[in-house]
Amino acid sequence: MSVHLLQREAVSWDTHSEESDLLLGNLPLEAEQVLGYRRLSQHQQAVRQLSSLKETLTSLDIRPFTQASVDKYKQRCEWIVTPMWGRVANVGFAIGFLAVLVAVPALIVSALVSWAGISFYLAAAALLGAVVGVSSLILGAVRLRERKWVMHELGSYAEAVPEFALQTALDIKRINPEVEFYVCSLEERRVVVDPFLVMRVKENGFHRDYYLEVWNESAFSGTREA
Image (cartoon, rainbow, N blue to C red; front, side, top):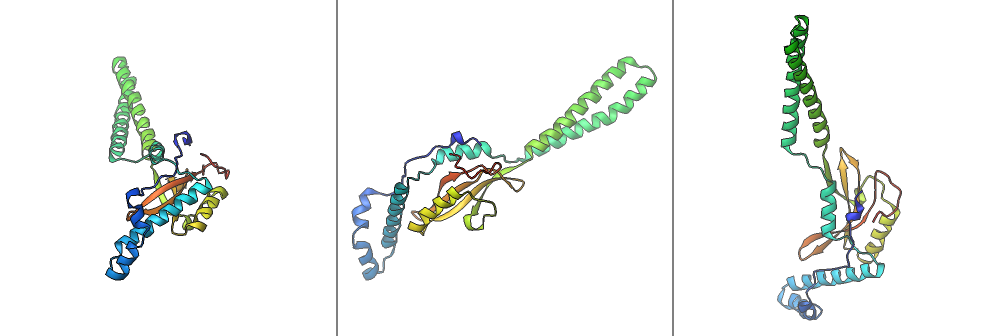
């Protein structure tokens, strides 16, 4: 794990100070009750929830990883298979196989009739073909092995989750039940490698993910990695 890439940040939320007086007042509720206009009251509720969540994280001393460091870490770990690598591996193996298939019988014939000069070139062609073929197989085995980040709901996550990550989720959920928790894991052929505990929050009508904890699944020890 390249956990040294991950950095934590101070809690920061997209709240607008110029709207605070309006959203903390009675106008949103009156607009909903008298005019039937609910958007402002919904906005007020969302801001209050974010403010409460900020206070919760501050009191628990929980700081999410910065999004920039998470993106860098995930890009470093992820392997995405592109069609180009498959074509390169297939073409390389085909060329190497054909070179060996043609050169070896010709080499045997040239050796029997003592064509030393031709035998040298045929042996070189067979060797080069074998190298190209084996290299293509290795390339295919490495580059066609895909690692992708997959998001799972915490409740349906099948692998073990360390106690410290569960405790973090519980501490937040008890105070702010509106948030949702997920596990974002790096998976290679259905083998889980490096999972994150992710908190999903509604902000301005959209979802935003905050990465709170990370652990090493391949060497599971139940300890915080960063």
